[in-house]
Image (cartoon, rainbow, N blue to C red; front, side, top):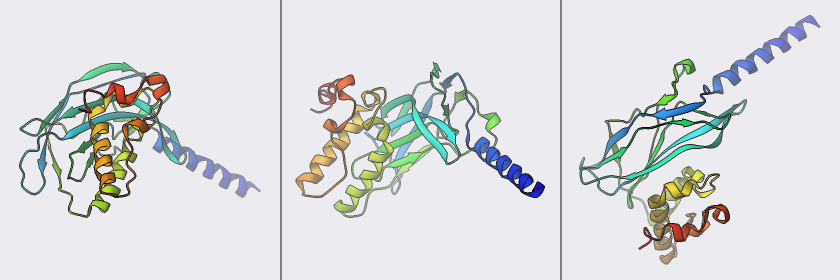
Length: 229
């Protein structure tokens, strides 16, 4: 009996350690250092102009099964210039009104240009959670990001872009009208959906009219009017 109780205690302690290992450090507010990086063609090394870049700082709740997204603390969008450079200004402090935390890989950065594979860039996972500051920074600041031209069929390209839609789930099913902060990438994907559909290529891309919470946030099509021209 004692052996069973001791084994039960060990299991409980192991589960507690696992939960602690999955939980990020909570801060009541966060801020971020500026981010500036360069996007180039992976094959030629030439800078890419007009690449749409989205940075988002996602709050998560720790759990036994891992981490569950609980909303976005900050969402920003930029476009690369002729030198392939994009910039996000510093921000904060911004009050954290939830019980969630920014995980160590934040910010998450997505980059997209038609005809290329989209890219996803994050910070490396930290093992020591006690070092996680409320002032966040991107490890990609000052570095070069490389985009590869997509070399598959249009059907394969459609499937590839569907994965980007999944990465942008926070914008399509927003809690706080997050889609208003990323108009250019949503419009670009709307245009890709129309182009692929015109070629009768089945795709899982969403249109502007599929953006959620429009009853509370207003019409997305009307909001994006200037970008749809």
